[in-house]
Image 1 (cartoon, helix red, strand yellow):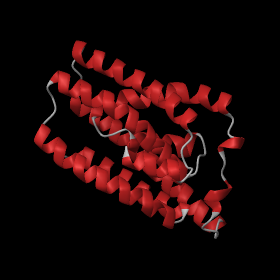
Image 2 (cartoon, helix red, strand yellow; image 1 turned 90 degrees about the horizontal axis):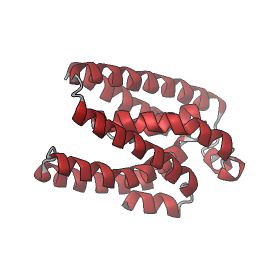
Image 3 (tube, rainbow, N blue to C red; image 1 turned 45 degrees about the horizontal axis):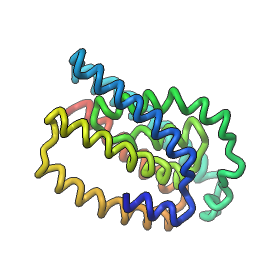
Image 4 (cartoon, rainbow, N blue to C red; image 1 turned 45 degrees about the vertical axis):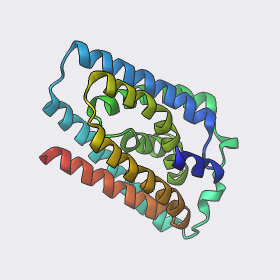
Length: 206
């Protein structure tokens, strides 16, 4: 919630896009909950599939970061993007199935929607990484309430660990929101890509 407020004050959050995409990601999460209860899924197979998707997304983001680094020397390029020129109708139609699937996968795997939402926003919609992280954070704010509630209901949450992670996440989100203002698009893309690739490798071998 704190990061969402920070990004909103920076003018990087479009509530219409965030709420609509979060809504369909939520439907995906609900579907995943129902399927998980009715049909237990092989965790190993699921991890391999998700890790592969994350790895491909990370490599794709590195490619885009290199392209931006070579073609753009102006660190203020992010100011040129505006949601006033965003084709809501076309992009929302495209985003509905993508974020439904993203919510489904994120809930089943428990890896966190941001690892999936950010690549979708940047790769599929061409939204600059600074804005993509802001929108993703806003979506997670809404989705987190539902996901936490279902985990509590299913009894799969460890409160002591969850509290510690929550404290770290709040601090990290606040620092990240401030830090993202000071680095270029390509640098932030490289950073996110490294996180994605590292996560995918960990999922493959752990």
